Image (cartoon, rainbow, N blue to C red; front, side, top):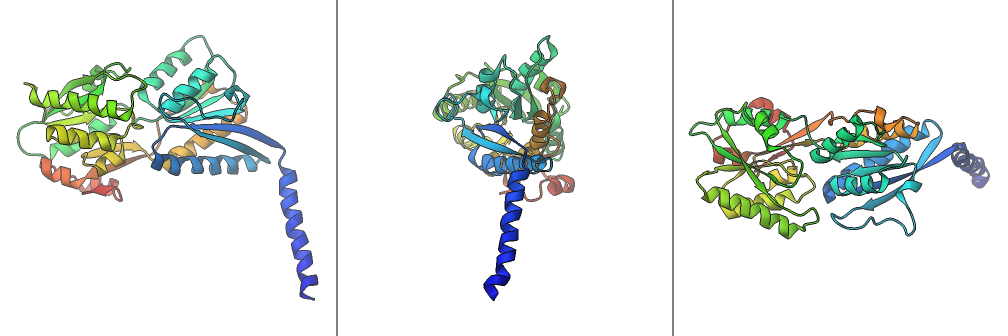
Length: 338
């Protein structure tokens, strides 16, 4: 008797599953390239996939995802014989992924969505979009409006007594990053001086080469007549910035004031300001849905992330004589380190 009672329920459940399956009219092939650090990728990519699938299922569509982690300087780890132009949409999270995707899709009609787009690629893409060509790419930058990090640093440094700090901005000399533009943003912190500390690094350099180049530049600055007291990292957030921070502290004995990574703050940097991962994933999914609906990428403006995370290291703040305001402590709640 129990079996007979259960059977209609079972058949109804099976019928519902079949109906949902048959009700899907279109399946899109979406390739996800990511070159983020492991923790960020683990947070961002599943949320992006779930959010995009939910948006598509509302219109009786769904996505088939092909996911690939892209190592810096390495080949695209895609299924044998698969080409990016075969996809309905390519989504790139991080710098190395964006570079690979841009190179493979340049001159094609396959839409390309960037997320965590580094500043130099954002500038390059903006120039392409401003020209006569119709770029197949759009996305969310991985950096904040220029000057946002300096604005918060200014608040922190304003609470400090004593002589002004000489802060060295470390950046790749062979990238498109403009120190002069950063310096203009930094001028608001007039009580402290910012100096340029460029270093040279090949695009396919490994972690050891990166640490060596940054460590050498920092050590030379600390020992020179510049008398640098602290450092500011203007670098791609996909780099192992926690190791960079520890290298600088070990080589110079001086702290890092800013790095665009929470892991770097946990390693000793005073502060970080970075896109909030889950909000960025959801923003990317909304853009992806518009592209799959037929929107032209060149008609969708590049945008900065809508939400950001502030991280603070209170031990480094104490060392520098900085007392963060209540407002900043509230803003960094849950991301305070010692």
